[in-house]
Amino acid sequence: MKKMISRRNFLKAAGAVSAAGVLAACGSSSSSTAASTAASTAAGSSSAAAPAASGKVYFLNFKPEQDQAWQDLAAVYTEQTGVPVTVVTAASNQYETTLMSEMEKSEAPTLFQVNGPVGLNNWKDYCYDLSGSQLYGEVTSDSFVLKDGDTIPAIAYVIETYGIIYNKELLTAAGYTEADITNFDSLKAVADDLQARKDELGIQGAFTSAGMDSSSDWRFKTHLANLPIYYEYQTDGISSTDAIKGTYLDNYKQIFDLYITDSTCDPTVLASKTGNDAVSEFVNKQAVFYQNGTWAYTDIKDLGDDNLGMIPIYIGVEGEENQGLCTGSENYWCVNNMSSEEDIQATLDFVYWCVTSEEGTSAMADNMGFVIPFKSAKAPTNPLNAISDQYVADGKTPVDWCFSTMPSEEWKNMLGSALTAYAAGTGTWDDVVSAFVDNWATEYQLANG
Image (cartoon, rainbow, N blue to C red; front, side):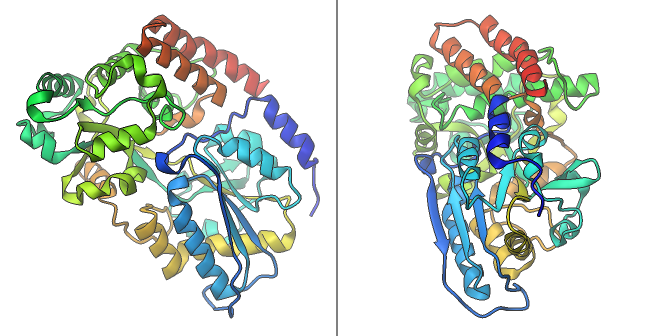
C-alpha cells in the first residue's frame, strides 16, 4: 500500500496545529488515571459470523469507562477467529497525545478515533476510505459518517446524549417534579430553593461540584459551551464559523453561575475538584443535579434506574421549552491506511462483527450502554437512553453537538482556565468572553493556515 507521507513527518505537522482533534472526555472519571492495555491471544476455530484473517487488530480506545467491556469483547473475537485483537485505552483527556505517540511506533493502531470534522483534519491522511466497506453498508444514515469529497474516512459507532441528570427521590422530597422545570427561570427557581433548604433536605447543594480539574472540566469548557455555540449557529443559519460572535455568552454565564453558586462547594475550590468528586456527591445523595451524559450510567446506576431522570440544559433562550437533550457523536472509527493490507482487512472484519453479531451488538448495548447507528443494533438497557428517546417522541428538538467545530484543544484549555479564574474570583467574565471569542478566531487561523 502506497504511503503518501511518512508517519513521523505527518505527526509533526499535526502537532503544529495544536492537536485540534482531541476528544472531549466523555467518560468515567474513575478510569482516568492511566492507559490500560490488554491483548486477546486465545486461538480458536473460525466461524462464519466472524471470518478469520491473517492480520491483527490494534484498537486505541477513547472511552476509559468501557475499557473492560472492550477487552472482554476482543477476547471473544479472538477465541472465535484466532485473530489477535489488542485494545489500548488512553487515559481521560489524553487521547490525542496517546494517539500521536502510538502512531510513531512500528506497530501503530489499526483502528483509532476522531471527534468530528476538526479532529479529522489532523488525521484524514491516515484514514482508509470506508465507502466500500461492509461497515458502511450497515450504517442507518449518512448523518453518522464524515465525508471528505467522495471518500468516507470515518464512521460514528455510538450516539450519545447529555443533559442534567437528577435524583428523582431528592427532587420529590423537596416538593418538585420534572414537570416544574421547563426553562432556565424555573430551573433556577427550583435550584435556588433547594440550595436555601439544603440543611432541611439533608443535601450539600442543588448541583454537584463543577470541578475544573482535567477529569471534569470538559463538562463545562466543551459540553456546556456547546449550548451558546448551538444557538448562535441556529440564529445565523450556519454549521461552523471561523469567528464566533458570542451572541449567547450572557446565557452561558447565567447557567455557569447557577452551577457554581447552588453547589456542594465554594466556587473558589473548583480548580481542584475532580470528576470523581461529582460522582461521589451524586451517588451519595449530596446533590440533586449532575450535568453529564448517558455514558455516566455505569457510575451512578447504584441509585436505581427508577430514580434517575434527565432534563435539558436550559440557558434562558427564547423557546427553550421545546428544547430536548444534547444528542450526537464525537466517536468516529477510522481504519489506519498505513497498516498492512492484512491488518486493514482484519480490522474491517472486526468492526463489522462488532456491529452485526449477537456477541458484538449485545456487548455494545448491554455492557457498554451504547446506542449504535447500525442496522443490527440492539436496544440498550441504559435508562438514560430511553429518556432521550422519549424527548424525541414528545416532539422536543435535540441540541446538536456543535462542539466538534471548536477550533482546537488549546481553545478549550484557555476557556477552561478563564472559567476557573472567574469562579475563583481572580478573573472576570470579560476574560471568559475574550477566551471564547478572540481565541476562537486566533485558533481557527492557526489550525487552518
